[in-house]
Length: 198
Image (cartoon, rainbow, N blue to C red):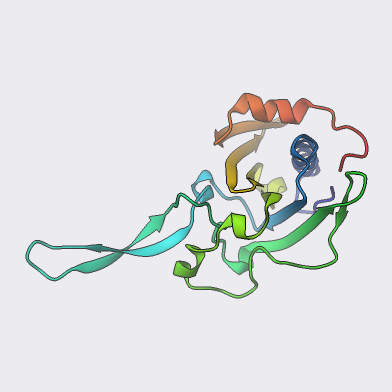
């Protein structure tokens, strides 16, 4: 599974992410795989983040007022990255024999135009696919010496989400996780992917 790279991406990080995604794909055999390349690093706060919305509140006897607040919903929505932060989207579909091929159509997960934040609160992952892996991968890992991988796995009405932040010392190591423990990530990093699965 090729992930677009340039001179700013650390090859070892890209190889590691590709291996993790290939192993996840071999385990769950989703119908579709979406990989989104995010401009620069992003933290775990993006996990299950739906957007900014208005919240009503009262000041004693005064008329109600509103304020903006972050939303995370029971039904997982598309992370509301601004269009200019998504520098690449790659879409693969499962074909005969269980292999994956690049899709010919371009159903963008992130529209190329800026939308009002409140619209993001209703863009549910389950509306995009019944069986899919969605992965957001950070860029500029060579200079930053840190990277991020966020995964949403859709199976019917269930969406499992997780985040892994990595840091480079002599080699890439797991710095923090959300929704998955470090040993699970290490296991995905160590496994050998069966030939021809992705």
